[in-house]
Length: 205
Image (tube, rainbow, N blue to C red; front, side, top):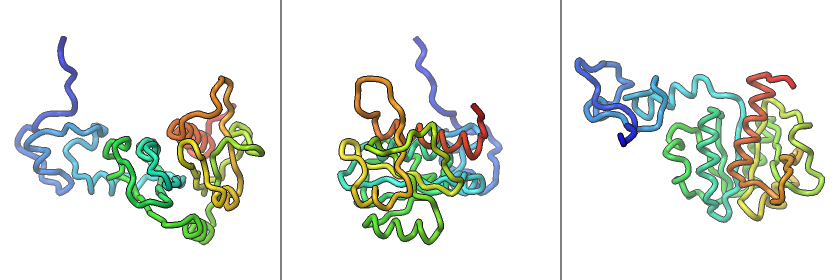
């Protein structure tokens, strides 16, 4: 059985001379998981191009327990090209799940919830918490404003009490099986896509 080829090989000569191209990638090939339009581009050039078309959505993640799901959330944020990812708590996080997509993102770190909330309020950004707790509004019935930051807690403990109090609204993803909650990385992807449906894709029921 043939082995599936990943990426592309060395670029045929003559090589393009635009500064956005990485000379090492041109010579050795590009095995990264990127769109074809970004083949052989430098990381900086890709990020600069993405910055031109980012959606206004922000995502925030509480990192008090070094949650392994943060990388998954960052990867989803990259897929939807969100404007900024905010990480609250520990500065270091497990990047394995991000599959190096964090290199293309705008990531801001905060030591405390208070610091994060103050910045969001100064930017007049709606803080919408995603958690399955009593009193949470169903996602399917919730209007997500264009200038929103979706906030996610750790797998297991969920959002901190301080963040729940700071949020303008807490939203839950409706479920129909036996488990109490979906994985936070999965929940993040669902919530981000719901925002896109309302504010970018304009999908109507």
